Length: 425
Ligand SMILES: [Zn+2]
Image (cartoon, rainbow, N blue to C red):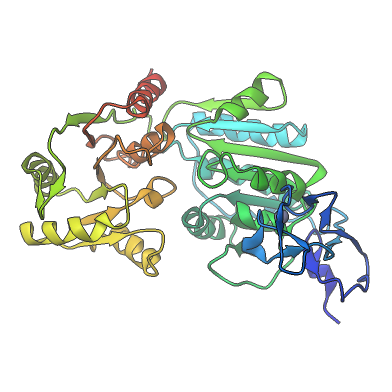
């Protein structure tokens, strides 16, 4: 028989036929009173056999009417206390970071749900180290969840380095990993649907980003994954209205950090109006070409954002003819996306064409940014702020170019610039 202790705090679906109760587990119907117990969705879709199933969480395997949702209870304090919470990181926080870090530890002890509103490049990850260490020290279980796989892949090595002896579970939909009983888990918010009252501490990083934002299934899962007496912490550079509302009602405490770790200001985007199309008949608008040339001549690596995947090869083809530089394009469905992002980080490319998948959670030294069609509906004010936040993150390179190219000045463009200026005050 399987070792069920590895499944503590997890939930999974078994079919109607397999109705044995596993040792120490409870089971409930996955579809109950017209809604799904795994993701909270009201079920409306039927299979050919007339049974309902849930579309809300179908990415994790179909939940059918009649199936059971089995939950393995977690008893808390399953782990031995670790010296210093396992923190082996030797770095030093700035006084402002230290202040937030201390408050997070304090709020965890006082079981206060907390929202950290920190500008892009504030050094959020480092500010979490002591919080996580505190949880480990108590023999409790923590999870850092984020909507984006790229951010999971960025966080995992940093935590592995900071907690050198600790076994960390990394889970996301593109990589199969057998369920383990790790004291610290780093995963996508989708993976939270596999947990039930597992964590004493749940940190959600980049809480304003797609697909978590405005997704009731993921919010349901996040609440379910935390123990009844557990603590939720949210991190964001661009808080959403619902979180601000929760804070107003006193359900969340907001901690603000308006300075980047190096003390410098956020670069304020420049804007450029274009009347004619950016790309037409295999010609890039001469003014846009000129802007790209300026960046190349400055020697800075360039992240060039385009709204749609199909546009990447079109731009790449034209640019490759114009400039003798190394370039690549990357998007969400690109099987080589991790390798390309890493190669760009190592300066093996001078220019990387990308969609919004690289809007956040990634750091490239000395990078400058041009956004083509910043007025496209795909860019929210939050994503524009995030994209601008890729620039000027290094101590020895605090400024740089962020350029919005647009045909029509939109509310999102205006708001993003307003937010950046406010944070700089
Ligand atoms: Zn569901």
